[in-house]
Image (spheres, helix red, strand yellow):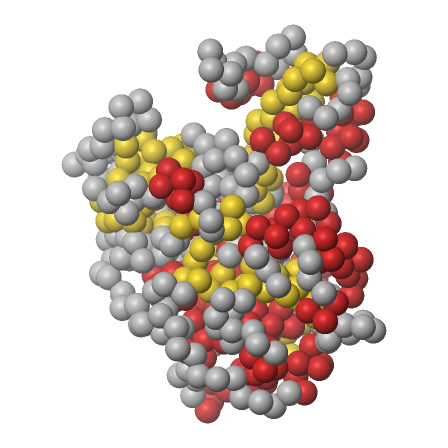
Length: 526
Ligand code: AYL
């Protein structure tokens, strides 16, 4: 077993609202909490807390409280932050939904999570409404933040001045959020994260990430995903920093917002690092305000990291984790320039880890010098999820009897506790840091009349970034373009198949399991 080189941190037994906002000082209340990057409109901590409280009061007056699940389908805006924390303050559970989801995806998540309310914005309403109706949610429970006839709006909720009732929940067991993740097995599942999980991960990561009060944090990574939710939204608020929200990613807008809002701390996923290192327009903007960039959610190449740091003359850090871990378990911390940029750094405080052999399940020794053998990374700590919603079997397959969560990632550890992710044993594909379950694309491909069999794996594009690639057995003539178009029409944009290779037969084990390793070898051979 190995643990964090840092001393344990205290994890207050509080709801996430009380933890983040309960001890705001007068001076902090006047500071800027959120800036809408597009309009420049700013909310102070005082206004934010007032809005959160009003949203909670209005919802509570309508019977929303512990036990209610509310879907939140909204891009990054200041309103997202007020609604998200308003729902939590009311004691209800938020299931955050990817804004790019198709109506079918939205419906599936609403039904699976048991959501009885949905909060969205007018430009997403057509798809959202279809999904809500199919999930049995009436229009009175579909809040449209910016207003739409026949629906309550955020302004309506903010008008209420009934104070929400005091929250009497157990932070350790009360489910705060239900983000969706496929984990180490096929389909997306609701990840039950408690108030304590969310509080813990902010406490574990805040000193290591080093966002401070004076920082302006660019929030381009979506709040619906655990990276945006914990590392941007909650952590920045705890530090009393200012968040600059970006609703839709566009590289030029990204550069402009850093320049115009003098952003100092920028959180990214690796594909953005590629653009920062290579894009000619970077020279045309004043990015001198940036002191630190943190990349997470997918592997960051060490050379690429160095190129970004050199071009922007800033620090570059890396974080690793999983939705199921709230999410941060490993970090290259702000004060550790000696750690290799190719590693994911060290274990955060209050966590235990071990590596186990993928063949025997035996624990792998941490060496007294040098680097260990590779093995599956297991993690344990106060930020590990309560379990998957309504799926005890998947929970048992993921968290063992000793409380260790099996990540499905293959890692090595050095004598100094530096962890490097070297491979992934689970099926999951990551495109731009977003999850794709190959089984979902495989099932879809099999519905194509000219496809006899199919398998999807993660392959590398020209920049070394992961993309979903389909191996297809055609039953009659079909082109790669037709296969890709078929998928594109039916899935959210991040799930598109981006490469196709035709093959005689999909390699499978005797029990019919796709041999993804063989496909990866085949892929590397072309
Ligand atoms: P999910 N290097 C390699 N693989 C990674 C990394 C990384 N730095 N980070 C995440 N992954 C992969 O649930 C890995 O396979 O959470 C892991 O099991 O969408 C999977 O992605 C989990 O995907 C931060 C910022 C952690 C973000 C995150 C991770 C959120 C991604 C710490 O500081």
